[in-house]
Image 1 (cartoon, one colour):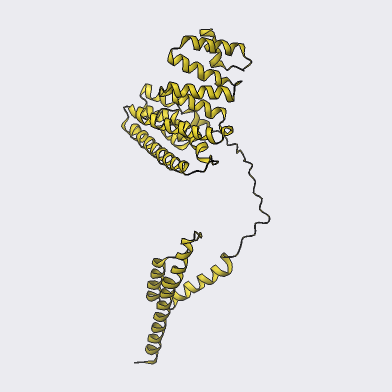
Image 2 (cartoon, one colour):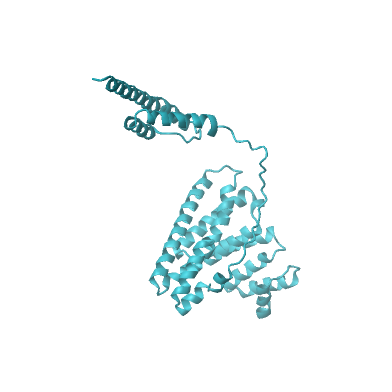
Length: 317
């Protein structure tokens, strides 16, 4: 055996020892210690046993170069990249900046509502409308997406079904999770109730669920409102109360809807919604006496009336 071969074997042996020591130290000592940190809820992003095993293989396949590469990488990490970032000159502001973007006039001219595209059975316009909805706020367009389910264009209907299914499944998961957390809240905690009222109303008012499922989620929403009413009545805004009244009315829960209408009138007696919710309730129940009595009270009040209510007064007043 020549002198060069002897030196080569010694280098391979030393490289093997370094690789073995590294992988044992990493897998047994380092990973075990960091696993204990994880149990103590310490946030980290470190290497696992699989990472050390892969590096061990690299060291064996690339003698000398492999260990030197990982050594240099570690030295760079602890000397440069691990240093604390100086945020003294950074200013964090909660103020939102509204960016004014130039309108794409060519694109806007080619957009038609989904309802019109379905009515004329225009596949190109319908597909373009679906794409534009997917790029925007999907949660506020579920009704329009549901209309596309019955179109003759199979591609558009399949795309609509996929979007609708994903959004509704996400809604079910989020609502169930927060609803369970609501049951674990203390007597003064109301975060879950406030979230459910706003989030659920945005979806339920679009009427995209089946009757049975719609009733189920409206009842859950009403339960959240009841909890908030019991814990902190001041947390119930006019919009919260109005939404509960209308959602209960849509599932024909007249007694519950009437109870929330009364609460709305007590909390916000000079609001337009306190009258309109009662008008819609009495009209649906065909209670003429209560309907006209509420309508007359609205006419005599100082509440500012919108165009829709004004038209209602013109018809029935």
